[in-house]
Image 1 (cartoon, rainbow over the protein chains, first blue to last red):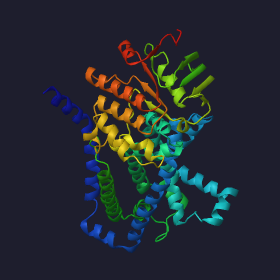
Image 2 (cartoon, each protein chain N blue to C red):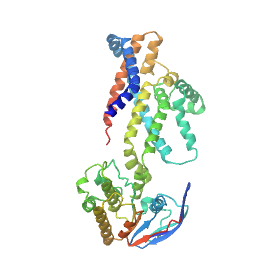
Image 3 (cartoon, chains in turn yellow, blue):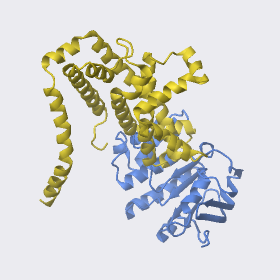
Image 4 (cartoon, rainbow over the protein chains, first blue to last red):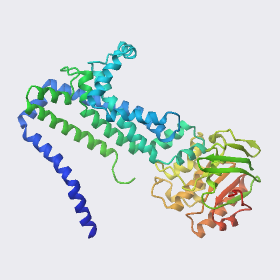
Length: 259
Length: 204
């Protein structure tokens, strides 16, 4: 039973963190009431924020995967000049303070390129801007996860597919991508969770206009700024509940037992 | 026929210099050499997966040095088998045919029978034993009717009986149609399978 003792020791070390998370949730719970929760859920503005939160984080997840899959694959497999630089650049959103991401986006939009984009899709203080602000950060998470995924997959199966008559594109689509499906799902989960909770860049770039660009994290900020802790915590718990539902659904898509 | 003319490969500290040989059409040749001497690299060059820094590769007289792997009609069985684990065994065997839009049913059924894989056909190709995976990889490489078959340590995971079976299958395959086999190994006893043994291709 040595293993049991070993697992107990690990549990004691790691358990501290689990307790901290649980304590935070309990504290949130105690700072609000069922009445506030119900009221929050009934408020049309908060419902609109929830809807925009769900829609924008789904959209930015799709966008993040759309760039993360090709970029992650290239960084894992291809050798090209400037690869190290690209690798550094895609990590930048991970280290930049979220607020700075928002300010940087605003500055880009002030330039000639940004103004040209604005003619086609208005972004600043617009709902589409919420998606861009989330995507600016989440693209990095998706790329990093997918690069690791492709690095751990042997290129051999794709090579065999090539000898069997596949074009590089076919080998990627028929062999590499299906093999990476777990990684894609992991990237989707991480990206969605991050997008759903994204606050800094959204606040700076898209602002908080009720019924227009307000998402749940910015709702919480608004409620806290007017001193309504009960409603703020009610919305937080609403976010936790929605995240649980989405993350559980995603997990069902990929059981963790080895395939 | 497989012909290599003065093939050189340079990658980092690893180098292969001036490899020249010819395997007659329809022959089964074995290349012997210790682990790490460049046997796998040689097969990759023939399959078109690695560009040589110098030299030419000819298959049945065609210079294929600059040709895409998909257009070389070479069956390749890597040492690690590299089965497509997201697909069934059947889809693995059929792959070279389905990707070309050709019917695969009868070919796959016959190959599975001869490779003793029929009972596994509808199983996903995960959790196969080493020997099963190796047989799937061999069937997959043969199904589309390549003119050249490249085998990288194909009998590593096979017991004596399976080995004899596989050698019989390869001999049979060569009797049916034009097929040249190049087989690399570090195991001297594999030489008995071949009608030509190439040694000292890799000067130290």
